[in-house]
Amino acid sequence: MLIRNLLCLAVLLLNCNLVFAEWASASKLGFSRPPNIELKDLHGKTIHLHDYKGKVVLVNFWATWCESCKEEFSKLIELQEKYSAKGLVILAVNLAESKPKIQTFLKSHLFPENIFDIALDNNSLTYKEWKARGIPTSYLVNQQGRIQEFWVGTFEADDAKFIQALEKTLQ
Image (cartoon, rainbow, N blue to C red; front, side, top):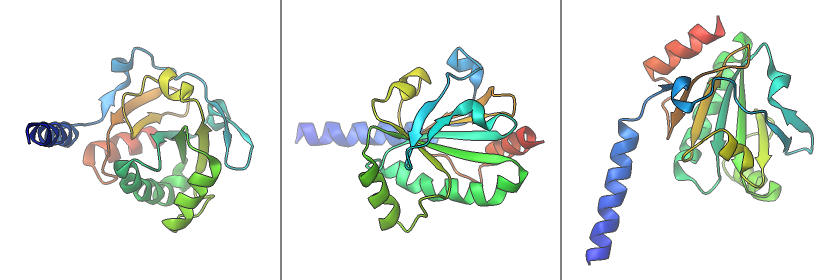
């Protein structure tokens, strides 16, 4: 009984933390230029972050077993559809899962496999280099390759502060 109560309290505290989470300045990371990304995508092509220079990139670390990530995935698709013409690119970096597992996830949720680039961080080294501290974690990278802001936890695609930062970065 005590263990169950402690687990419930821990879940409650974690959820409260996410409720008050918000986009934070890149200065809190200790770097403004993100570490390079050099990962394979679902088709075996190598993805480099510098390939997106001149675009605004929303880098999102996620996993198929993460309930918050599943929720957020459809929000990422909405953002891609709404802002791609203005230069937004979504780069979804999956943590240590196999290509078949990711493809099954996409099919079971009726997400197109090519909606945006999905990179495979098989050993989670990129996740660690980016100083991510949970999933989902998202980073807004500007056209010059600098991190503008980051978010730990699920974000709302219609969050006023996020939309303001995104639209300002897209200008």
